[in-house]
Amino acid sequence: MPIEFLHGRVLDPEELEEIRQQIEEFDTIEMVDPEIRCIVERNWPHLLSKLPPDDD
Image (cartoon, rainbow, N blue to C red; front, side):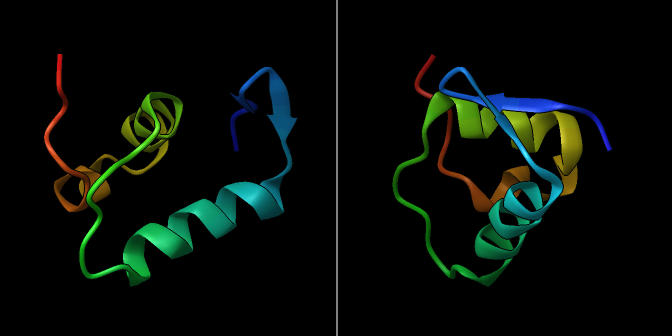
């Protein structure tokens, strides 16, 4: 698994797994941190459809 950072801190594998699980479990996600969006894009692109549209 790649090394990921969130707000300048290295995420351990358990934290990455927790992010994935939370995204999968939520029915609706209204806001997402841009750094979380990037982590999802790199690691689980199939979950991008669960995230709200990017504001950029």
